[in-house]
Length: 620
Image: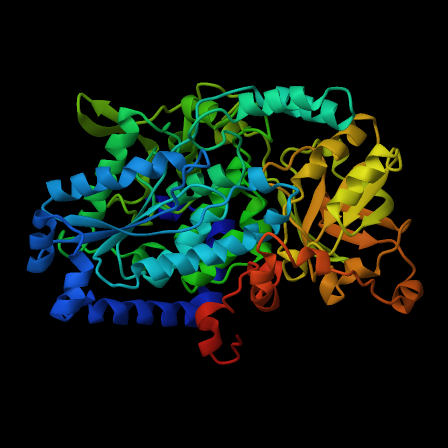
């Protein structure tokens, strides 16, 4: 029986609803990409002077290939820098790609670099307020890199939090080009995650010094490669594979290995095969359909991935003319089982996950249960059934073989029949405090519902001071407001996790409510995040007062202030002086972004909905 006949009815219903909702927007996007394709690569139409500029720095062999016009030229867009571990391995990828292209009688050129910042470095620092906006800067930088229109296909080199969503959005605007995303892979495992978390909490309580904390952090983040916990960066990689934008089984192969280099070379050859010159034209815009986006959502839910993607995936989908909502995530979550336990949802890291079965086993289980779309044509040239395979080196030859059919460690990854939970662990919250999202996959069921008085803060640094002063040693819902995209760029508030975790361990009922973000590594404390409308726009959080009792109930999807309606209606919204958020560390350069940015549920993007502005009733 074909997998499409077995598709879970909820997944089918949600997908059809997305397709119907997006029909006009998607049609406009496809028409525009088809027109870009018909206009062709301008390399064949450039004046001699223009073309000479385009290949002046190339060697003689590459120049001759570019002059002939009958071979593919691949653009490389990379997030390489040598400061950050996830991006440093990309340094040598362009040369591998160029060699592989020449082996196919084609060429590759480094089209441009995009900025890549690390949330791990900027947590709790002013630079974090640029983090979310960097996604849209990366999208624009990708467009600049490809604007020379010298290319017949593109390879996108990136891994981490905002980098992959930004590259994806940029790739979508050049959707007439075949595309393949090239990961660098995670660093080898270091200090166990539970030990790292324990030392962070001890430091928060003042029981160990900074030297012990720094030693633990250094043992955790210790070499080139992506951080090994399952945050936004590694969620990116899994979702790209679920959309068919990676080669099968390649997300979590460590950097600096012969296998990783072979994968990079093969990716180059594959994008050339997908070009018009390669004979099987397969552009990005035809590949990334509503079904591919739904597959990404399913992968995120099944693996307990980062809540940041309730922002990023909305913006990414919009870039290809598809409108998804938080309600789509929530409805899918009711039927997608939790199949992994990767830190912070468990103690294993992504290396353990990969060894226990990894993405290939996850895909096998989801396909076998009718819980994902098989009929998505991938950049690998197949449908999604090929993604039950893994890459191996047979001598010098890269080959794919079927991955394991059973989990090698059911504490890390499980079959659908023995899922950790029957649902995906993501819920949408609604009520008189607005709408938000919560990930409960790492929260014990008995600790998910919290009803307690609130303590309100307008800056995360105030929380630390209150904790150290003993002011939070009780049942409490910590509210950190004026942290939304228009207020200050929506920074992550990951530094709050140790303090809240200590309070929970002391037996208190504790939760966080914020219009900001938590890290993709948010953990055991229930956190209602991305609350919209945000406080700076007189959203409901601005009407809360210290001591108000709030009910946070993920099981029933509620976020509610238990305040008399007449009292609530009589209040004026709180106002916060945000000037200190808007200057220093380059933040003044992003004033225009803060004015243009949309709300959290619309993806917190500055682009105004792309083609939606051209549709009846659309707006910019």
